[in-house]
Image (cartoon, rainbow, N blue to C red; front, side):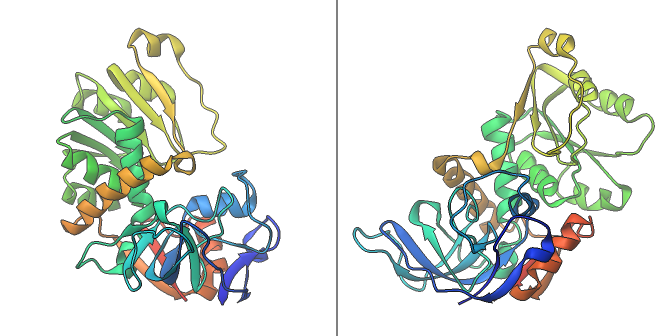
Length: 326
């Protein structure tokens, strides 16, 4: 079986591509023939060691996401999946599980979901992880209900775009910040207002657009200005911090508690099986309705994974997803 893997933690040039023994499913597991995988920033965090997570013995196959077809199920009780079904997963490659960047992968049955009919597998794999991340950030951690006002920072990226789509679908009024080149795209997703994140009067413009404050504030840019975020919060508003692994901004405690506000950290790697399944159901529903389509996709062979990691870490993939096929 061909796979992209590492034998120690470190930079992208440690990634190898070659033959490994094929995996065998155990009880409660499903063997999947991989059609495609992709790369996410969190994959680089795991590969480099920035995100410390239990890993299986080396060699360690990289990658969170896959779309594929069921090849076989493990011994014992049935998994509920049948051979040939098109399925997907977005939680491999960490917490003791081997990754998806291989010709075959073993997936726990409770982390495997059916792909809706009519959805192109090699396009859908590009959105699984950012879309599930967005859903969990908004609803599980952000407590978004029907309506309200949501501010999405960095709305032009993959997670940011999914945040806009889910929030609009929930009936929220969405304000967004992004580079001007992304404004038309973000408006097409339903955002009410889009502001250049580099505007010198950004805080004042956002405050004028949300005179009653923001109920959920989510910034995907990795630059967390908590002083500005707290100032924009509505009564009992929530700030969801989900990017900027090395960021250490100041938190204005007084203004935060005077608003009954909260700051909630969120890493999808810590999501429970039940939370991931709930997000997957929402992702499938929106995919089936024609939403969550990636803006731009590059297709490459699986052997290009190391280069994809290098480009991702160099910031060269803004708005573009790399899909890798065995």
